[in-house]
Length: 236
Image (cartoon, rainbow, N blue to C red; front, side, top):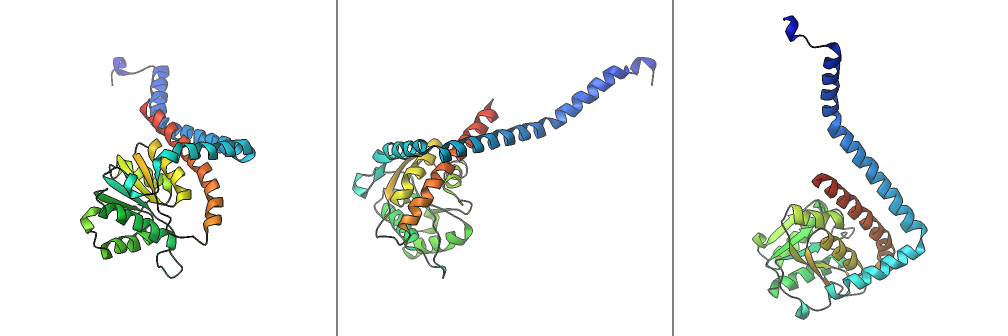
């Protein structure tokens, strides 16, 4: 190597540091996003937990937001391409729980009425098998069913409905207590969503479901805040 090809030590160190910084950039971004998510989690959890007025305000706003989007009867529903049937726990013997069976029945009613073209079943792998088998037993063609085995939570179900299945408009089939949160998440994530009340009986766990829903709604806000922050940073 000639003398002209040699780089000053200071320049070589600067270039080496620049390369190191570039290689560390993705890790630094991930670390920064993780810290931001942690701050969001703690901040929203603190606000929602320690301020009863916030919880009351959230409940009031959700009811007001979803009132015009929830339908008791098929007669008032417009057509949508998809029905989204959200999963629910199975019975101890692996049979359909009353809540899940009623959600499936609501989706079937939409399909038979010609209000939807396709039915998206979203839950975990354990619940999806019985859900799909029930629809097939009712005569719905397998070609008209979509299945998402990673719909562990309502947020994931709606997010993946958009990103994986290309859903842009849908009618959500679930119980009344679950519809406000489901509609909030669906619309925030880009789905022109309406909801149909799937309640066809009184449920033994209705009071417990209502209590759990309060915590689930707090988590939904945290999920949305994290997602929107990530999306904003990703687009910048």
